[in-house]
Amino acid sequence: MSEIITAELVVSLTRSAAEETKVLLAKPENAGKALRIFVEQGGCSGMQYNMIFDEKRDGDSAAEQHGVTVLVDPFSATYLRGTVVDFSAALTGGGFKITNPNARQSCGCGKSFEA
Image 1 (cartoon, rainbow, N blue to C red):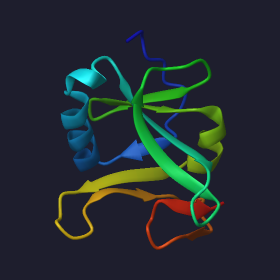
Image 2: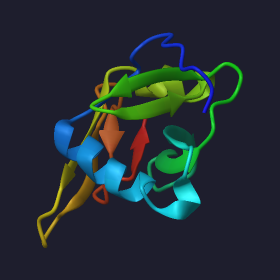
Image 3: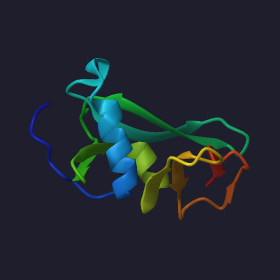
Image 4: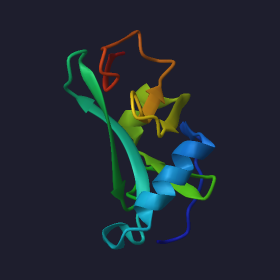
């Protein structure tokens, strides 16, 4: 991956989210990629969260946290500024959890929100 220029910290990863992300990034299909967090139209509340492994694109905000590079596109940054991503390994209710201070309302599944 080319040099990372940190424009701003848009989304924060907790240490547990970063550790789980590192495990997933270690898979051969994710070599050389970073964690992209973004929003798009959809879900039961109007907007939905997504996370993929991707390469940096022009205009992305990039920040390294706990050894993980996080990418956010300009459109998503508007909705995600101040968001925290956590991870829990609990059998019930475990997985990645997104806490977004910009969400006026979230659905029960936690994967979509209203801005």
